[in-house]
Amino acid sequence: MSLTVTSETRTCQNCQQNFVIEPEDFKFYEKIKVPPPTWCPECRFRRRILFRNEINFYRRKCDLCKKDAISIYKKEVSFPVYCHECWYSDKWNIFSYGRAYDFKINFIEQLNSLLKTVPRLALTQIKSLNSEYTNFSAENKNCYLCVIALGNENCAYSSTIFYSRDCFDCLDISKCELCYQCLRCDRCSRSSFCSFSENLIDCIFCYDCRGLINCFGCVGLRNKSYCWLNEQLTKDDYKKRLEKYFSDLSSRAEEESKFRTLLLSFPHRYAYIIKSSDSVGDYIVNSKRCRNCFKVQEMIDSRNIVRASEMKDSMEVSFDDRSELSYEIMSGEQDHKFFFGNTCWYSSEIQYCSFCFDSHNLFACIDLRNKSYCILNKQYTKEEYEKLVPRIIEHMNSMPYIDKKGRVYKYGEFFPPELSPFAYNETIAQEYFPLTKEEALAKGYSWKDPEARNYQITLKTEDLPDHIKDVKDSILEEIIGCEHEQKCNEQCTQAFKIIPQELAFLRKMNLPLPRLCPNCRHYQRIKQRNPLKLWHRKCQCAGLTSENKVYQNTADHIHHKKDEPCQNEFETTYAPERPEIVYCEQCYLREVV
Image (cartoon, helix red, strand yellow):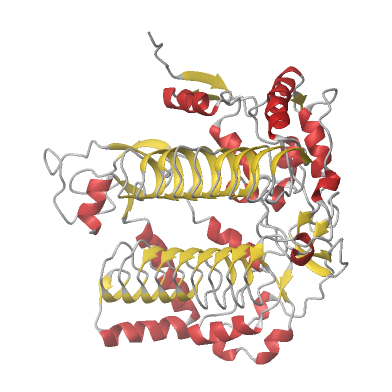
């Protein structure tokens, strides 16, 4: 007779808040033979992304060939950093760093000792041309300061950008061309400041739109042309308004303010869940039985996943594709049974590993390629490996690592934050969970103060021309002071330069010069994303209008009576105190599609 598994409430040993472990979670832990977590899902996610630096680049020397290199690792790290050519060469022996397991020392201390000595690859990039300043990237050409980038050409200052051309300052776009300051857009062309939209041409400041041509400041429109703030215009009237917008600075500010007002007066979809069943989260596409998942597609039976595709039967994974039975992972690719690790691809049956590729049966290894049956970078026979790993797991439980905050690390925990080579504000943790220096240090994280760059600023932002037509080629020689003056919490670089391809792009698109440095512009974009957190809410459709009376419904909704409020409830990334009007799927579709 089998026992019924029930949910269980536990207290997170990091934030001290309660979290619930569901019956299906216990079944998963039993399936992969790991203990239940002691940290809540949000703290587990933050702990993983403390090991991921995406946008901070440093000039340094390759520690092997001594040539200049670009790296995500600052000079102060303890381990050697090799350029791409040296890291993949036979000039060094990875097994020379191996060591036998010592049962007199706890596991984390031994792993940390290995992490501090094994050479690390300066940047993760392959098959690219003239794209030195890119990271987590492949098959790019003439790209600059792009991260998580694949198959792009002539793009700059962008993150999570795929198969796009001539795009600048974008975040999370795919198959776009000549786009500027766009967020989560697909198949758009010659468009600027658009977000959460698809198939736009010659559009500016459009949100949640599809199939628009020549539109400005529109929200929730489908297959329209020559619309201005959701008002239909003739072609001539639209061109007149657009000309005034570009030529009159006060008119530009006024129209953009009207757009922001319209944005808050139009219903927002509670979540973007498309062709998916029994799934909860946001931006879930073609998936089944996914819970607390964000920006995923083609997923099955997975939970607590951020940015992944074509995965199945996995939990607590961030930035992964085509893997199965993965758990507590930061960056994977086509892995099978990868537990508690960071950036390992095409591997199986590996635990507590970092930067291992095309390998299997590894435990606590760094930088291995095409290897198997290794522990702490030391080679074993299959029989020796299978006998030693259970002993190590037992040792991890009997002699756990305890950090300075009193948090206990037995088998089943991801790496402690102090093992990360990055300061808190160097990582994407600062993007998802922003902290001040004082807050970060109080929580036990490290912090990197801005480097003394000693820029000789030659041009202040208030002295920049308002219109691109007034900008001369000499702007390329200027050092422009960032408007934030390092007074923000956005990794401000204090000053920046305009690069030639950027100036050509801005002229072609009739766009003004930026007033913020690339880092500050990046942080302004990510502020437009909703948090990776869910709130239980009720649809704000009151029948004839929205609950706050701001929006007038244009169609009959599927309620018992059309003047009665909708009773649908849901999980959404819009917090209750947010000003947006949030509708359920049915009410939203009646208004928008």
